[in-house]
Image 1 (cartoon, rainbow over the protein chains, first blue to last red):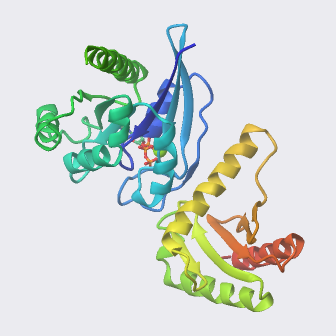
Image 2: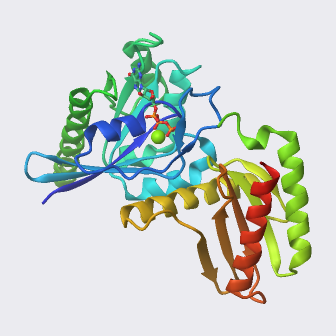
Image 3: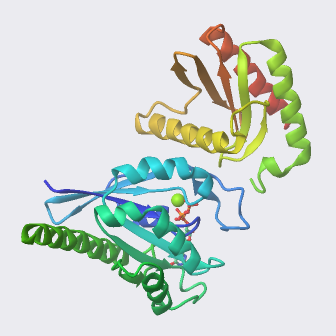
Length: 188
Length: 130
Ligand SMILES: Nc1nc2c(ncn2[C@@H]2O[C@H](COP(=O)(O)OP(=O)(O)OP(=O)(O)O)[C@@H](O)[C@H]2O)c(=O)[nH]1
Ligand SMILES: [Mg+2]
């Protein structure tokens, strides 16, 4: 059985835990603690270690879903989780003070997941604050990382179907890049 | 509860005083910290440890301990111990509070003794916050 390990990254309140709750077919392993930073993300709890869920794609492919804590002070967890993942869904909340900057810093931090698998970006909470357009995100990526090809979607992490589309896009992207990588090494 | 206990000067002061008192009880206590459930350093004993970073780690460990006891259906975690060749960490929740006490002991202390002292000071902290 094929297996994927996907990491959900992005800032506090982007919807990583929500997305894993929407997608997972098993009871999600949660490590929520009371949130004392309501001024940054107005929600009762925040993830302090990891989220973990699982979903089957088709009948064959098991996908393990891990979520990080969004705050930099938990970057030791980022290092642990980064090591086991082979692809990333980067969620950025449109209502963050500077969502484009957030996106770029998480891309930088988790660059090895692009190299090892693939990355897609989901812009969440666009219904709360419209924020930058998808074109703005793509332009910023193109400007800072011209070598990377990363699809950007608008997504509501509370919506299972939307999340599943993003996940399928990522898996297709990972598989395509793996195949392309194989073809180019064979050609050399 | 919000804002966090680390932002309340009276709590920070009382927590620091309590940790100092705790150190007076056992010379084997080499480091101790009180931290919020979401990883903010409330008070710590002076030392080389990066208090902010350790508070984040200790809160993750606390939450993972709770996730494990939940998964295994054995109720709530009462304490966590990490033993190493050079000492051990005893960690537990301040009863009824969004606060965790984590303490590092050298090998001259027994685990039982370290746990007893940690427990009693966690309870003292809870009483102070009443
Ligand atoms: N209106 C709206 N709300 C959303 C959307 N996406 C997520 N939310 C809400 O925003 C909050 C996101 O919280 P979490 O899922 O805890 O965010 P997180 O990324 O796991 O945050 P940390 O673990 O603290 O880093 C939840 O209350 C969601 O219901 C969206 O697209 N629109
Ligand atoms: Mg979360």
